[in-house]
Image (tube, rainbow, N blue to C red; front, side):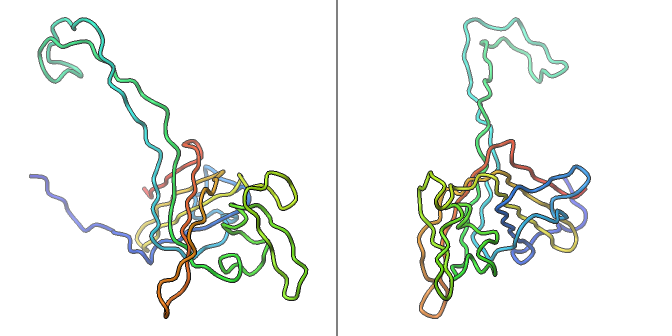
Length: 209
């Protein structure tokens, strides 16, 4: 039996925050992700799921058999076995999904040019010079009229329960979905689902030593 001493420093929902940045973030080896000054604005989200990259492995069967394997360094059993190999496949992308609060402004950001999912997903949009002013977003524009979908943004999740910190960063994200705009009920608020991905090399996870 393995005995575990002490208590587990668990992280409650209120101890986490998601930051969104429309611009590239400067990451330093001497600075933890939660201390980055240009990590963007914090957003009101729930149902957040972060899926780190994974590496699939395929078994490859080969002709012939091993010579008699004997127990020793790196060999746990004795026997003669068919030749086999494990083929490591390319790492998958990292993914994040969740539900964000819907607002009359870009997720409640005070300046239309601020960090937002709308800009990451749709580009910078078109200024509408009405009173009050608006920003009009289009979907699928590959030109420069309203701006192409941004590919330099960052999503940073910080988990801090007061006893310790862990961080997850996704750089150069592509927001793939700003989903159904839906309500939580007549006495609740409106919200929408979102999804984003980044390459394995652009995902990092930190735990406090």
